[in-house]
Length: 111
Image 1 (cartoon, one colour):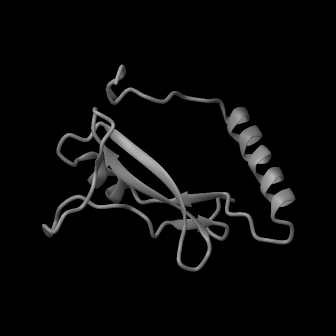
Image 2: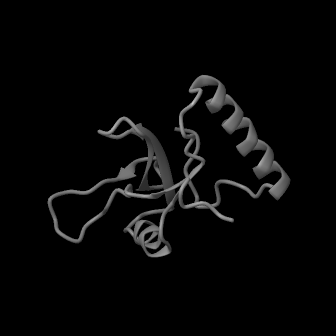
């Protein structure tokens, strides 16, 4: 492993890039899945994100893509360590969490 996560990964993009990339995604999804509702994003609350970031040894959050039991696309968030490993729940109550159960856009979209 040549690289260790530092907590500084990622970088800003402009609002124009955000819009362009979202439009690219929407166009591809609409072409691939005509007539289906395209999920544009997922909302997670600040308190839950901070709970992930406050896990012992966490330096960031990893996002996983999945398909839930209802056949819908979803994302799951887990805390990650500097050595690339995920911080996953064990049998201890009040321990690490995996976030899902987000609020999808649509219908929970900005105006």
